[in-house]
Amino acid sequence: MINKHKVKKNFSEAKDYDNYTSYHNITLKMISQSIKNYNYDKRRLNILDIGCGTAQGYFAVKDAATENSFDYLGLDLAFGLLKEAKRKIRVSGDAADNACLICGDAESLPLKDKKFDVILSNMTLHWLNDIDYFLNRCNSILKDGGIIILSFLIYGTLKELEENFKNTENENVIKLHKFLKLEYFNEKIGPAGLKADYSKTIEYIETAGSSLQLLKRINMLGAKNAVNEKICETAFLRKGLINYDKCYRNSNGMVFCTYNIAYLTLKKK
Image (tube, rainbow, N blue to C red; front, side, top):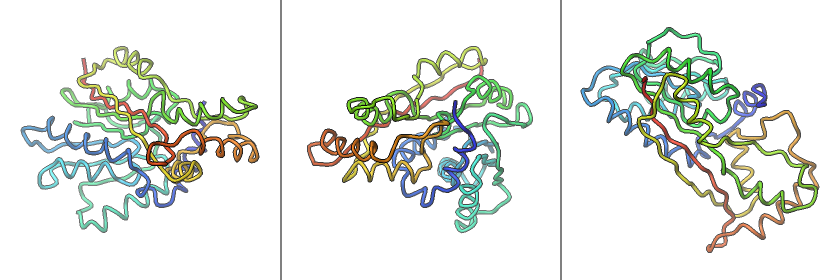
C-alpha cells in the first residue's frame, strides 16, 4: 500500500524537480502530439492535468494548441510542486485566466461530470492505490468524444536495483516500489467503460557516473520509497551500491538503470 502522505512530502520537497525529469520529457512530447492529432479542427479545449507537478503538462498543451485556445486545470497532491508551477506560468508571461492550479488527490476527484475534452496524466498512476476509482472517475468527468492520455512507469522499472539487492545477502531487507504490470492495468480499462485507442511501451535507460548519483536523481524527482517500510539499513545499502557500481556499467563505463514506460490514449466505449 502506497503511503500518500509520504508521496506528498517527498514530491513537495523535490528541489530542482525539472532538472531531473529526463524520461518525463519523452512522454510530454508524445502528449503534445496526441493533443494535436485529437484537436485537428482546432476547437477550444477544456483540459485536466492530473498530477501536474510543475506544470510541464501546461507547456506541452500550449505547444499543441493555437493562440492559447484551451482552459487548463492542473491538480497535484504536492503543494511544493504547485508553487513552482504557478511561478513558471507567471514568469512565462501567460495570462492567468486560462490556467488554474489546485492541490488535490487523483484518488478523490470532486469534479463536474462531462466537463473535460482532454484528461492527461504524466507519470502519476504508479503512485495510486485505487486504479479502478481513477479510471471510473475519469470516464465520468470526460466529455463524450473526449480523450484520456496516460503515461506511467510499469513493471521492469529499476529492475537493476531489484536484481542487485536480491543478489546480495539479506535480500529481504530492501523494499523497493513495486511497479504494476501493464496487463494488470489493461484489465481495468474495459470495466471502467473505456477502450484503448493507442498503446505503446518505451524503455528508457538512465545513466550516471555512479549508483549513488542514480539514487540522488531518483530522490530529486521525489520518487523515494513510498511504502510504510524503511528501504534498508545504511551499511547494507552502501554495500549494495558498491556491488551495483561493479555489475551495472555500460560500454562507456556509465552506471545505468532502466525505466519502463507505458503510454496510452483512451476513449469512452
